[in-house]
Length: 315
Ligand SMILES: [Zn+2]
Ligand SMILES: [Zn+2]
Ligand SMILES: [Zn+2]
Image (cartoon, rainbow, N blue to C red; front, top):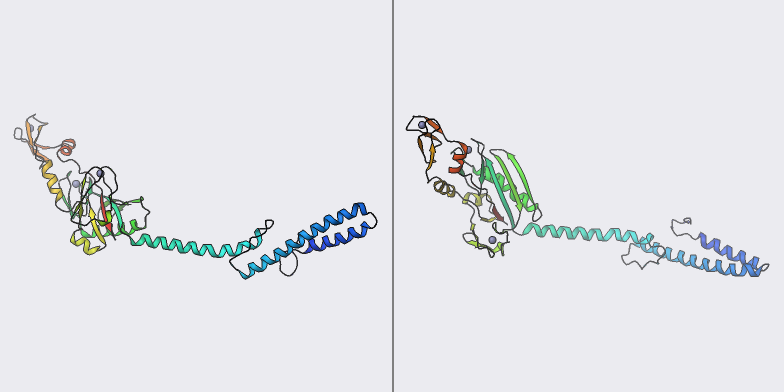
């Protein structure tokens, strides 16, 4: 079939040819009626079928031109032609609208970011976990105190809160930053959950800072904390911190670790050395040697601090 004149995709030609065929058959039927009368009837039926196809094709074309939304149910033979334009135009627009509304909902609610942060000691390169927004940290390997400036936290937490808001729930990012410190940061968009038994907190958004939460499953306690003043001044959107170490807790750990003296013999004379864990260089009172304590002993006295996960909940 070819397309016909007057910029229509519907072809009238088959109708014309078939009408000609009917007339031809009727003329020949006067000579051989047995053959050409039935043939004329068959061609006439075909002619009528093509005529109605042409009519309905023209009707659908007109409707497509007007871009009306309610298209009549198309006849089963030719569904492809008229239906496409209206379908293209409308559903796409509504889909965009829905997506926009969804992402707006995500933007407004409170967000919880699980943090795992650590730096490498600028003096000895040991890994130092930062289990909260602390402003100083004690390196147990080299016994030095390291000051963490507020600007470090403002960069880290500012980036984290911005990134995590755009993450899907249950996903996270991990990065290594070489700035003031060699810092390794893992942020994940995870609602508060029990770090012992992994049970989700019940209604974590209603928790008030200054309180504590105990796990409904295993009873583990978690402090729900106010952000330190300097931090809430920089980020008023922080609602609370959870399980975060704040300044001062590290020193207590240290004392507890180093109270038990350990017996260690002088490698030069075999005399017993008094090792308290305060100083890595120990003087031998028998042979006057200064003994530098080996790594394994020193680490036993000063176990590396464990990395703890903590949460920042913000609006
Ligand atoms: Zn160190
Ligand atoms: Zn639990
Ligand atoms: Zn000695």
